[in-house]
Length: 398
Image (cartoon, rainbow, N blue to C red; front, side, top):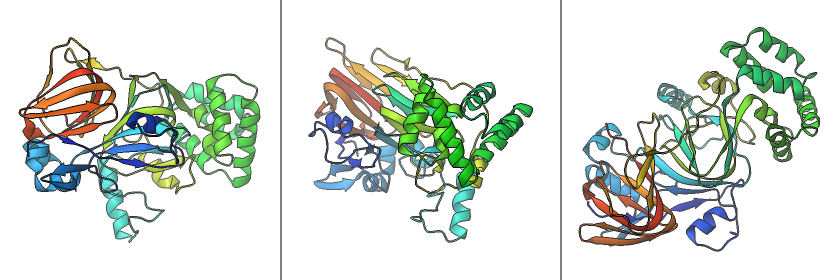
């Protein structure tokens, strides 16, 4: 199969989503009736993209299953068991998402096997592992994007916690001061996650009162989280996780074990095609503290912000260590020569601004803002010309 195909994608409606961001990207009525949180592009069984193929409307997963090497390429088909290894999304957060982390490959395999052995149904609310795959992910900001990721340097955690909870967390602060390393940080975080209901209420109340007297974004986010989750210890998370604000075009990569949360903004999200999430707060969903502690990386430090690295006149890449995906941005302007590409595996392109013409052999497609296309490996080469910005998901070269 050499045909480049337009994708028909599913919009996921979650309570934390935006009423405007995805609707405006797709050219639909804005505001939308319901909050729209994510636009999914890929072959995830929960909501696979649809394409026109041989006169039929088929799921991308089904088309890949019938043509794995044509679409994925021989190397990727062999490496990823004839499945698309990534899921491409637009994420639009108007409210904070849950604090969470993802397992590494070994942890995912062991956790999936263990929960299968225990007979926990895949759809059960207390199920941690929905599959046996790891889930690294990359988030690139389309608008200013706020999030939290990774534990702060321990001196910052101590300073901020002393400022907001000097009485209720006095013992926990003292213990971390005595052991200011990853083991001490793990004990500190475990103590927070296992506070008695009364201590939790008192701690959150004290933190909010202290935050009301401060003007730093850290404290403003404590107050905002409290508005949404007044009984959740995750309200304190801006004091022990790095608060990060990405400007449009900046990105961050989240490896296994890194505690994080998306707070506000619209971005491109590219991840391994997995649904394994261990939650740690800001959610009414299942939280398994022992399992979360088992997968977390308690290394403290400052997070890296990824800037795109130019690889051609028109394409820049966001470097990461992921084997399943690579994200790049394509910028086209009038007067530029045709942008030429040679797909080594399957690629998905999303137009986020403007319009362009995509040509491949005899095929020519007009692609405008909000449209996305799937380019199979068998297409061999394609060209883009116009005035537009595309984000591209692909499989890294071996």
